[in-house]
Image (cartoon, rainbow over all chains, first blue to last red; front, side):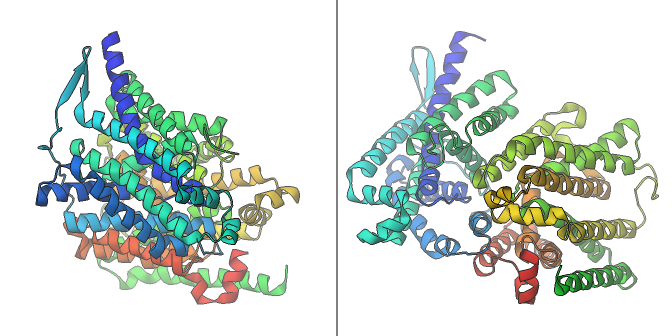
Length: 292
Length: 327
């Protein structure tokens, strides 16, 4: 194994890790806001990838251009899912934790079934996009353009999110609700609106990731499932609820995955991620940057 | 124990005995192999879900990784059978014991995790098991194991001519899982588990050894699920990692209990009786095209039941019964 090969895979791991962070941050946001894990998060990603695919197939809009459109559509989708389904799961008095878990799980199965029904189980891809299949070479290291763009979008999105949470009124309302959902009602903040907005924002972020991934990943009804597990690991690593933790967790996951792929057969590359997850939650049950 | 509770328990036992007796007579009327197959699967899932319910329903530790124990039961039995010629009966017991030991070994670190962290850890560990078996050449890797025909007898636990022996074994397994649950419900363990589920801190302060009671639930639950896995492997005569350890199995085990009523005695049975025939029928009549109709029905049903009847279908049957069962 040459130094070149090691640097190459670490660089790819870093790029992929930034994207993992973007996939996971919506999950972290929703968890932090209302202590709910969205087990349909992977299916949100899947829907975004299909949206991106159909915008390309029917209107020839390149995924890079359609990304904001997909994010906007996903925002509405996330808010609607909250208002139509999750809101009611939050009201359960008996078996509250199970109700949330199985409601979002049921939603995931439903979305997967609908995708199979309407889009067939066929694998689809967008090979003719602007950046598809192209690579950039930096000092002998080859970096695929789609992943580079994905990493750039991820960094921009995290920057935007930081600004939004800390500098805007709605961001502050979001933070306040997360700190004390009971007290915000006293100062006139509608908890339900904030939660709906949080779900929208979370879905929009994973939508952005889905649009980018549509360029270099196969699109099929089950695509979300494997990424969802990576997203849970990412979030748990960084600490549920921590936006910065999601970014750090994503980078760690990307690097661990790349390293595992160097050492073990490719079919075992996820084992490294899972092992690191188990190790971290055993040492710090709230994740690396989780509060409490 | 108040009178009504004892009376209810006796009534439950009588109902179960009558139902099991009726089920045992069913093959006299039902000769169709396709329907018999559905009955076998229904009994098996009822048994699995009942076992899952012990840890996840009664003790409140939601596991979505029980496919690991199912796969261990299946693999232990078939590896011992094909590689060493050990009779499946011994393999089945060995699988159960190994699964129980692994469940306790995992419980040691896992039971410190709360809520979502615990759920995700169970998914992750089952996924690791799946990946390892897929890459384990000696155990057939991703290709799996085809179980060779060594006879047609109860001794070899293989039946070529008729599905009925599998049916009766599944019935015994289902009755066993139900009876174990019934028995534990009124034991020290049963009360501890419900206390741990409702409020672990309060339970701890009242002298419940939370950690040990979780360990006990995990061991019983994993043991019974592994027996189910061993049965399934003999029944299908073919196993591969994805089909016995895949995530869908973890989900399929949980769903009857979720539908029927988590943490109740009759929930898993009721859920399986409704869910499994429905799944099999949708699969053969509309789902065969791979269009995912079965998933749509499944998913919509889970969302609807979770939201409308968080305590499952048994809560519809009798208010007082549910009250008693979930407490």
